[in-house]
Image (cartoon, rainbow, N blue to C red; front, side, top):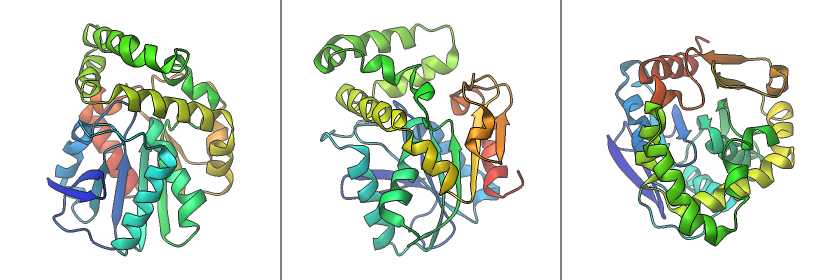
Length: 257
């Protein structure tokens, strides 16, 4: 594993230097860290690619400077320009699925070839926000930061589900302010319907990925022609079953699905 940094953005990769081609950039979900999916860096079949896993603002013990997803996306764009990246595969999970859309819609605009965008339950609709982010912003910001976030931590630590307990370890490394602010932005963007509209109409090479146990409330056809489910998993498959998630991830990158 190699660490990279651009401005205040931290990331890990399977390569020491950033190349210009065959790049995969992975954006994880709210309250997670790059270390949660670093096992992907060791997969031999992916060694022909450079996989870069980016930490979200205020995550993985990073200092949080009230940076929204648009500002964050712009910095990623500047990173791509600086490294002269020519083509790219995006993988976005949950709130991380919003970032590639902001990149493509606002900044890239066909300047860099997006070979594929794999969106894993990427908060494209209002229904996607109902489990966590919408509940988060139902509280006043200071109330959530000072009281409710610790309650979420305690509830996660005491969960009967092992994958929620694993998630709680990463929650401890996440700024409560970042958690709230990104939740707020996620709800606003998802409710606008612009994310889904762009994903459906403007992203040409895309896959919508979901967990078999996830209750998808919208008709699956909403998400495009290529869809795939991860067996025996839900929203956090890289916690629930690393082996299955890694296998599916590999197959999607190699275009065998």
